[in-house]
Image (cartoon, rainbow, N blue to C red; front, side):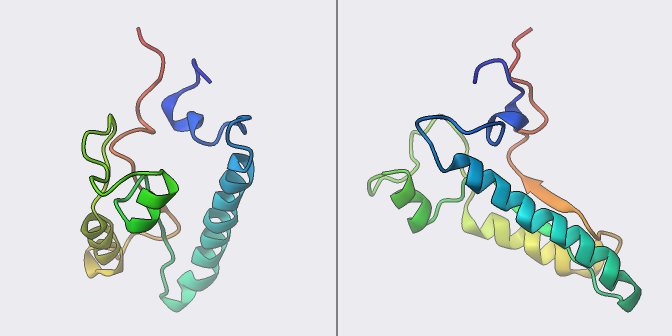
Length: 120
């Protein structure tokens, strides 16, 4: 998948070594688009709907899924979120500071969507 932009790489197309990746990626749309629809439908009632989309979060499940040992994500070549960082993002979205935020996806990916895989 070399040559694809970083943000596209994760869900561009299924890879033979990850046969369920396509379904996983499609399921993301199954969350994001209904959230947008709910946001527009509930806005007149003063209810906001947003999504939080983090990259890898250091949890027991992610460690197990990735076959990591007790050392967890130490020494990995990519950044990993702590659960409290995701909780802080959610707290922001439900606070009055985010009263103008509705129908969006708050992406927490250390800038991966903004980077290109193309090296100039």
